[in-house]
Length: 357
Image: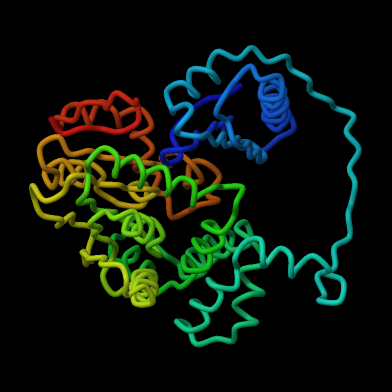
């Protein structure tokens, strides 16, 4: 049973089946996956482009030109799934060898994921060999994602101390690897999400946009390519932000401005932007309410706010697989929408964006 459905950018929904990992929950994920797959095959639902199941989550990607978040959410909520839990599954151990002479598909995988270009950028920025950069990116998202959490814990980062958090975010290079692998992974379709956001903003006449907490700058690059006057934001003097600027320097054809904060204080100005995008950012900060108000104030009249949050996912109260997600923000699983309304936002007709009237 799906416990929560949230947006994953503009062109995907995130179906959360619970924080535990067990056979019952995983069977439910698989049942939804097969049921929706059959409906797609039978042409009983349009616009869904990809289904990505995990142990306790299901990501449903869709084509914004055909459908939207609200329609997909309503569709999933209306499903009646016949449970098909099997308790006699056989465990199969598959030996894996990743030596070059046996990894016959590595070159195809590298080419398919466009690893070469990103590996070259990371190699130049971190001063490591191109081979080492390719090898680590080839491990994929999940391995690099695990390394972020490991680095956070190994450095004894204190989630109750803002200075400890800020120091880790400034000094870690693990996000360079994780975000690069995430953005290259076609299963997550991050590029498609950036494409959908950029096109949506452009065709809505939102030509001056701030991308908050944009990490390695992938969304900023795509919006600038679309012709949007783009401002990139992240933590000043962090390795992640420095890598984003390094990427921007390789694209002299694009004019991407930068705006940095040196603490959790949201110093982003007022009445400046037609749009603000915050993807997977606010679950990391200690003062979500202050950021939400600052975002409202920095928008011009009729400006739009496009959030994608991961409150209540992977934090200390939900398995601690993503310890950078702060448990103090779990309340925004249910307080997020009411807070935005209190601040003065109204929901956009697409059901996903928010508008400053």
